[in-house]
Amino acid sequence: MRAQVFFRYFGTFFCLCVSSHFVYQGFFGPNGYFVIEYQLKPRLRFLQKEKDQIIKKRKRLAKKVSLLTYEIDPDLLEQYEWRSLGRIPKGKNGVLLLDPDVKKVS
Image 1: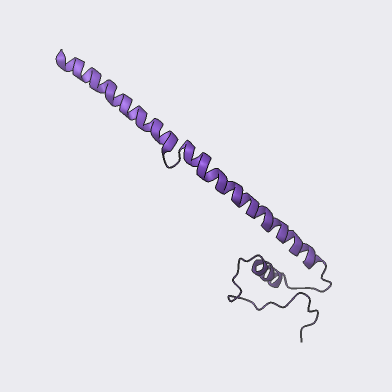
Image 2: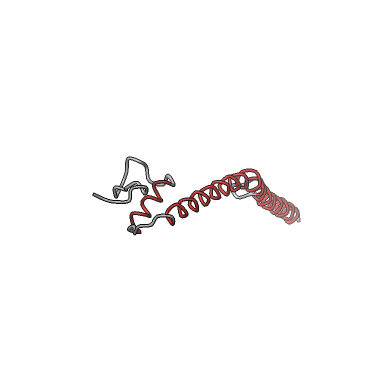
């Protein structure tokens, strides 16, 4: 009889501990509410602003390229675009790019 009462209370206590563990992890764990609310959302807002700036810069470049009157190789154009967006470091060029203001290649 005593053993049944002991195991009943122990089972209740064990379930309470397991439940409280999951509730704690839901709020303070690595993917919990507070991490998402106070760490990930500000980072998301920052990245969204950066994305908007890149899109504006890309549109400006597309407009600048559309004003060109001569044919240009699409691969060179893409390389120039990536370089001007800062995705390719200035010292690391796969293809040498010409200034788009230069009209003739000699």
